[in-house]
Image: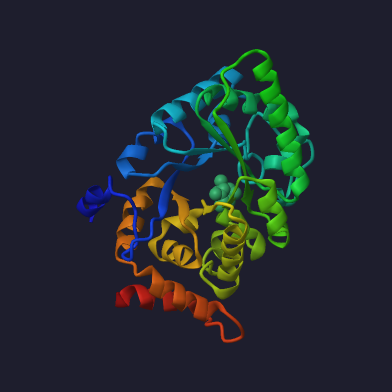
Length: 326
Ligand code: PEP
Ligand code: MG
C-alpha cells in the first residue's frame, strides 16, 4: 500500500470516472510543512494558527507570527493555503491566557471568533502579520466558530482597516484576499444563502459541527462510538451545505476528521464535496480509494437513500457494501 501511495503522490486526485477532487492537508506548525510534498497534498485546507500560540509560553510576537506565515506560504510554493484565525478557548487552552469567568460549558463558551472580536488587538495583529507575510501572493483567511453573520462583518471591518493601514505605509499587499467562514455552529444552517453571500468560501468543521448537532462532547470517549456521522441526519446536514454551495457558486470544503477516513471521504464526495482537507497521512489512502470509485453510481445510491421518508437508516453499512462490491 505504501508503495501505491507513493506512486499516486504526484498524480492529481481523480475518481474512477474522472472527477477531480482536491485533497488538501491540515497543518499548524512549521514541522508539518515537509508533509505537503511528501503526502502529495493539493494545498493546506486548514492551517490551525492557534498551535503556535499553544506551544508558546507567552503570546507570540507579531514578528514571530509573520515569520511562520511567510514560511508556510514559501513552503506551499503557490499551492493554496487557508489560514484560520486563532481558535482558542473550548478544548484549546493557552496556559498564559485565562478567561475571567469559569466556564461550565467551554465548548459553548468564550472561544474562537467570539474571543478575538472581544480582544480585537489579538485579531488585528494576526491579520497584519498575515497581510505582510502574503505580500505579492494570495491570502486566504478563515474565521472559526462563526454563529451569526455580524461576526463576519466585524472581522471584515478589522481586515479592511489593516489593509488600509498597510497600504498607507506602502506595504506590499496580497494580490487577492479571500475570506471564508467555518461552518461549525448549527445556527448557520438556516442562513446558508446569506452566509454564502457574505464570504468567498465556506469550510465545514465537522468535528465541532457533529458535536453541536448531536449534542455530544467531541472529547468524551464514553460517547465516541455512540452516534455516527455517517447516519442519515448528519449526512443530510452535510448535503444541505454542499447543495447550498452549488446553488450559490460558493466553494465549500470540509476540514474535520471525517475527511480523512476513506469510507467517510467517499460519502462526502458522494454528497457533492469536491475539496476536503485531512491529516497528511490520510491523503494516500483517500486518493487510492477515489481512484477506484465510480462516483456516478455512488451519487445515485446516496441520493436515493437519503431522500424522503424511505431514507435508508444503516447508511454506514450501505456505504461499506457499496465500497466492498467495487
Ligand atoms: C473542526 O471542528 O472540524 C475543525 C476542523 O476544527 P478543530 O478540529 O480545530 O476544532
Ligand atoms: Mg473546530
